[in-house]
Image (cartoon, rainbow, N blue to C red; front, side):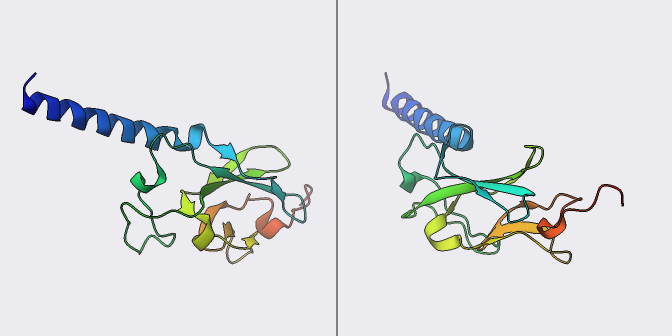
Amino acid sequence: MTTAKSLLLCAALAGGLWFASEWWETGLAQPLGSPTISPNGCYRVEAFKPFWVLPDIFHRWSHPDDFGPTTWFPWWEYPGFYRLYDQRTGQLLGQSKIYDLEHDSGQLWWGSKGDPEVTAGLIYIGPNAPDCIGDRPTPANR
């Protein structure tokens, strides 16, 4: 096998491993601790550790406000992401991107009428359900 073909094969294998790792990161993720239920019972938030085939350093690190630069070859301290569910129906309402939870995460915010979204620190997780804005259920007969 020639050197050019060997290099091309190595590059294809490395690219394939990276792509597989990006694809499997949320599908095969492991839960991090117990779910958090909102005070009025509308929402459930679960944290997950991504399933990465390659070491953490080979996964890019995005800034939560989408204005910061993407960092390649970062030193992750606590990679993870969140999923938001309607606790009453079990429906998935949203999923965050993967961030370093050590730096970007924080207290859960269940939303409000003027800001109908669930966040954890700087991390956007998902929208409020239309009948439960800010974790305040709307009576069914309204």
